[in-house]
Length: 307
Image (tube, rainbow, N blue to C red; front, side):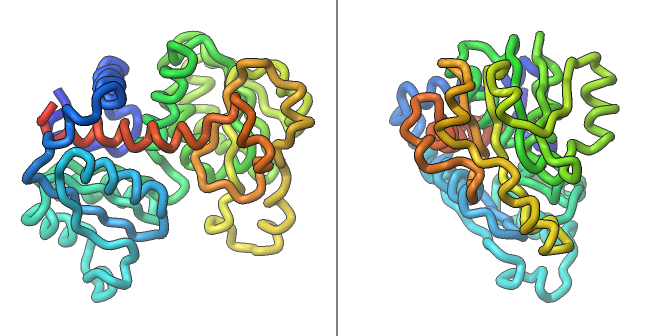
């Protein structure tokens, strides 16, 4: 039962609860019209303290497609945050107006703090370099619908694994499925944080290798999860410029891949996937974005208890 719950990180829900969300998302995809009034009279508060066009649009489109309404802001300068209001006071006030809230914040842990003071469900839409659980739901639904199951895969995560919160959340979530292996491909400066290796991979006995060369590992992958270098997390622009084009997926590199390998990307991409890849049937990142809206519809409906 998910009604009234918060989603701060992927591990907040059991695999069985995630299956319930995916099954509802499948049902919405098959017959969206049947769900167009499920949230009639409900309001989603969209609290975005940093830019995120895609995630914000995905949530707002999800609520509108369920028949609900949306209030909120897309930058803190247009809210009472600019006057010094605390997160606790903001969410307490928002709880008076809305039925559910989604929060994107540059500080790690901010949505968790909001959930502690909230009378309505809070969904973490990304906090700093920490977690991005609804992107993880998107990724898992895409894998499930394409491969038929989530386990029994070798997944290569490539790019900025240090600051890429989508990768951190995905590794945590996949650690609970059977026979999942990771190939972690990054420059030495952007390796996956030690706490992810220690507390998630090694603690659960999950097989993984770290690598720097993409081509050398392409042939072993069932899924290639590309990420952009997170410019906004760098303190030194020279370092960003030096590292930003470390990996660019091109048609010649795809020749090393399996015929049914999936290419995923949380978007936005910058230069890490050549537009020439878009027409390759293995490139699923735009379909992945659409699934993201459907899985958010399912999540909102579950947390509000309307489905």
